[in-house]
Length: 232
Image (cartoon, rainbow, N blue to C red; front, side, top):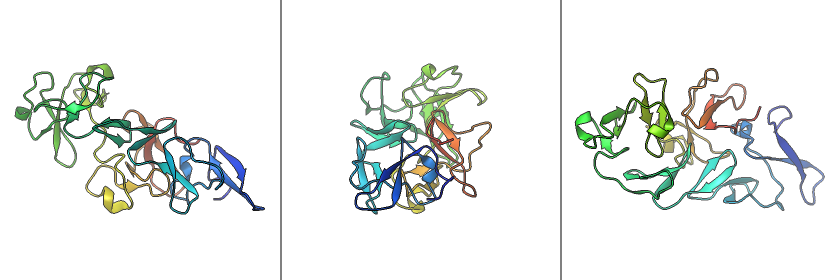
């Protein structure tokens, strides 16, 4: 990894070696497509992380989600996403602090293709994704508090609407094939081992709330990562 490419790094001396290798403080995401970040083999990974691949990279353990402050274990009926741990398909929280329980037809996030399928009067709108699939939600929100858990209020939409994170964002992957057909087509094979939304705009940031657009390196697509995780 060359000087000037990766920022926010602290040096660690490799045991028995005269060379110096680097390890990120937090998420030095600029390593994404330029070979990853190296660490001292005698230095343990952080909480909920394991050594991966060439024994020089830490990744989240299975069932944990990347956040700007580290890997967080997801609970029962939860899955990792670009916005942290959210309820799995067909599961929902009745309050922000509640466990994910199986949803009833028409509840927020339940599958739909038209408004008629959204029989819960609190969530009467069928929001269609670019893929053509849809889910029940509500419109006219003014803040995230108006949305169900896992949804965010998109005030730039007309009318404003509570949306789920992009389809496939945060999905575990080993190659781009695992991300095909989703809204998150880039497989980060060096850091998070998850699918990421690419080709976002830096200014104004058009990533899903809770994530930010990051220019990881010259000549590679901008990607959406957890807010606060992009190295300056």
